[in-house]
Image (cartoon, rainbow, N blue to C red; front, side, top):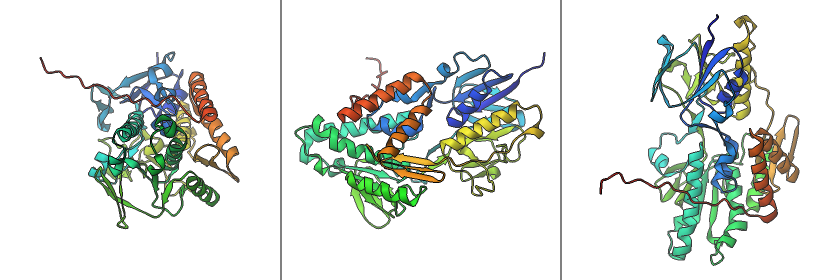
Length: 420
């Protein structure tokens, strides 16, 4: 009996999960390895951070996803090293061998080497970080109600660094929270002093979108009362004060860093095939210099005629690279493999209720129709029907009441193992 090819996928993000699902039920032995036990729908992390939806609504356990699969296994551990010469990977728990290895480790927040900033500012690239932001912001409000005006000025400033979709959506959500929710939760406090600041290195927000969307997003931010600082570069943050290249400073104990990402490179691959913390691949996602190692999604750097500087690090690229690689792997001969090319399907962002911008190929629109389109698209991308319904219910409740009931401060207890 012919032995099945053993494929290991490192990472269960959009790319890794799509690849695994496309290989489900095929004559391949697939092992998905990830350091967390669930897939995360990253585009809605900002809603977890603002208390609009529960983390469980956008988190999907791998063992549940592959519960009925006969050929896909999941292992929870962190990969420490790849040993290509032996077709082996080393993890924190065990070693695994492979016939084909697919690296889909995605990205993490890029603090550009500033360790102090990394220690004090919040990133938002996983569920834990989104929950940490929610806890911290809500604890700040609890502190404010006790200390009132005696409070540190930094408590009254929420600073978001980076004006891409994540930064813009966070700013809009916090602005709506300030207007509609906080005055009801804390009726004896004046939240006019609470300032939400979005710091952008570009002239307009959403610099990767059309001029119309950039202009409208800035208008929406200003309508919501967000302080938008354009063409500013943050050079430091020590937990108390944001320092900018222009010399301006902002006191803040609440800084969220959304200014860039960097690839999660795994040790063991030749560093000469790593550029911008991404693995250089050919048009089939094969890592340069290796026959049986592939990289897909954010961690892949593939130059094509349409994208000579590599593809954008977005979910659509990751999903479609996973689909294309699966189709190639399932073909009998590599001579039949199809090269990958990304077809831009557009981009979109929401900046609060009835405020969104959508860029589709040849068609752009903004406002309440764009906002409904944004909601519909994100609901369709959620994996399970149960989660779709839960999110839809939360959104409708918030739409009608301008409120949510998900503002829980959940901080795990630290066990004291010292003998009494």
